[in-house]
Image 1 (cartoon, rainbow, N blue to C red):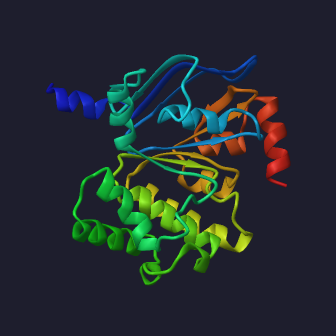
Image 2 (spheres, one colour):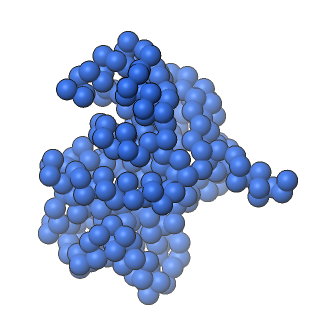
Length: 252
């Protein structure tokens, strides 16, 4: 088997025994998980359970206290070259949209392409418009963030991440800052990405999305994985009492 074939058969993300401490507080406690290529992993759990910290360790926004992480075959170490190589593969969408208020939607999407990918202005604009069409708002290209709804701003943030041609997308509660009527438009974009085969790790409280899109669901509490399995098992036949108690509150 060739090296490329070996790489393609390997998991897109592999985490072994991840620990993250903030002082004496252990936010992530010996977490291991594997995300296959083109698969969607959804992480659920109460606030403070370590879900977002796991995401932030994957692209080294947080430095793990111990444990190992591989992203697309790259062993993530303290080496700056390794970190930058991983970040080039990973797009991340946060709770807050983090758009530059003085730039239009189009300019927000072209900026990183030109600075990081070294693309020409014409190429960056072409890619930006293609991604705005992908998320359904090409008519908002020249609008400033203040002229966009929360859902539209989040879709611009997704388009900005996609314009960098990531192989993996991380979503950290991307709908939590949105009004209820705006949530569906963002989730619809994420469902389309999942259908297109994008590898995704999603931290969310949107159980409907988890049911529809996830290949695997992880339930975390107190920094640990309590239960993991296909969505039909986690939502219909959870084994662990803590999972059942959490879902009984969420799915009321």
